[in-house]
Length: 414
Image 1: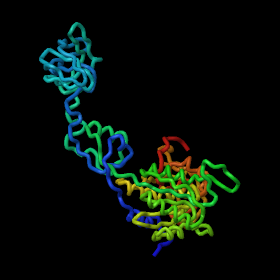
Image 2: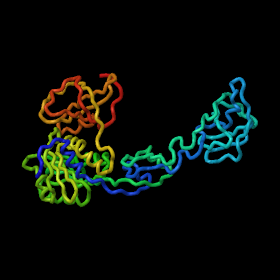
Image 3: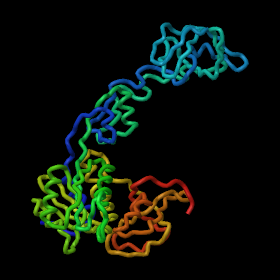
Image 4: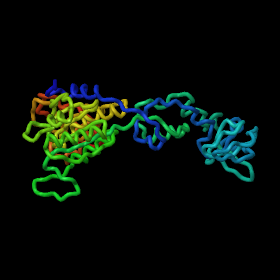
């Protein structure tokens, strides 16, 4: 039996509980960037793999410079030059030093490195003007990563630092989760492809591109299906096409109660079992969910802002579950309103806002427009304020919960 008018958390339970984490694959290291790690990584070697110098200078014995000072330098004979990537031929003995480059292995017998700025070399001898404790300026074997240590846990997104660590450990390829392929279909007689001329009564198909970009940002791979007229049999045919090409199908438009809202009928025609219709939230109430052949189908509102907000709170966690992420949800913060919000409603609201630090406090300023059809308002937001049903009007200074969807603004003044 299809459920109706669910709380958001219940809808998420229904969907995330049915979502399947995709299979794994082994890829070359650079191809793993932006993917989710599907294995725990244990360090096969120490990093660094040997004691090394962190700077250009001289490797020596700390005891030989114990009394050195600007007016009374220690004078040592320079026996070798040790560049990065090479081992010293001999060892550092009492009264000697070796010139050493950043990253070079510490020569046998040396226990200290003095930076070149604290020395003066002439005719094969170096004068050292500082005293340092033995062990100074030496990066020890395994100081960064110890052999056998777990450095990365499965479920982590692989970005530049993670790729760098894997490369430093000599790991050329890793196991990652496959990206979920998400078919996206826009419905509506009014929609026009971007390549076509805009005629009276028509609008460009922005939802297709906005949702495709959202899928990419969530860790999925969009499969655009274009647009289709408001006819159930045509929509059903495109849904079936999407099921054959992807792991999840998204549609926009036709999910409400109007004469031309045919998504539920089309889902049924495509062989899907309907799971629920409508969620207790604004914008984005008219969401339809179905399942066919073990794959989920979600019909979102055709209003651009409503579609993106529904994607954010409902679809994004679903894609991240399928992609193998260990964290499905955005961070939430408690923030102070910088202005009044005068509307009151029975349903839970997600308000577009800009969150930042003002006079040392986390504060939120509402977007000028909150209409479900106003897409431009999302350009100036980095958060959604989660306002529970029945709460409102809201007054300046009230505390509200914010879902952080972008970067925080730096410190400022109201």
